[in-house]
Image (cartoon, rainbow, N blue to C red; front, side, top):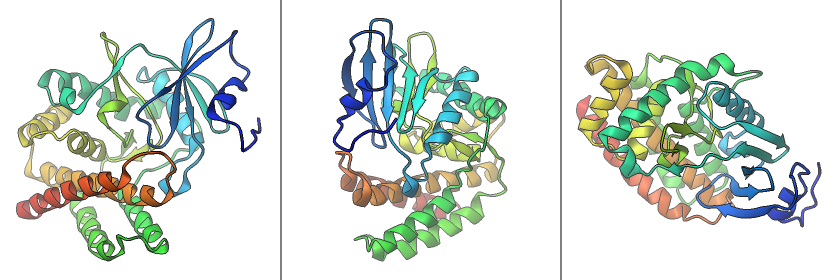
Length: 297
């Protein structure tokens, strides 16, 4: 279906032609690469995600669709109800999104880790079609090149940041490869009171599990002791110096990627969000993490 440029999101949702009777539409807050809506008709409630490919962020909606289907087949994510260009309609789960404070509790982290492990272990068995790789060090280099081409205000910082990324890439190997979510923000975990769900597969692709674990820790500001518990629980063995070195490098890379993502979004995103503040926050967190990484080398 082709939409006119003047159509509102509500018009686009009405025009999908999949609804049973009149519908009610309400925005869902929080999306910073999509616009999300809760839609109710006479039969059910659904989540509608509106978003086209975003090449500068390496987001491909066909990959997101394939990952969403595979994640549902693996029992991790809600079902896909409908898709068309720029639109993904998902089963609505009556649940609350987690907060970083939730994930920092031992009880919730103990529930989150099996879901992350299932993502890494099971989704690839169900994934169909061409699959992507999410290699954070390539993403960092590509973001830096785009920032340079855009004459970003952050241009003076880029050589130092890219140099640090190269150091981290060397320190983080050798690499185990699994299917990763690659965006483990607290809000992407839903708790329905009985079980957890993992949603939003914009950045899904093959990667090292340490990237997801590093992102889980950095996005939710886990303490050093909690990070150790996370790693020993996930790998089911005591933490070694080698694993800790590789993990710390990938955690730093996760923070650097988030920083550059925000720098790019300051220039290119039309979504109402304080990207400049988000950049400053993540750059400070990356600097602290990298200093700790250097001290441990």
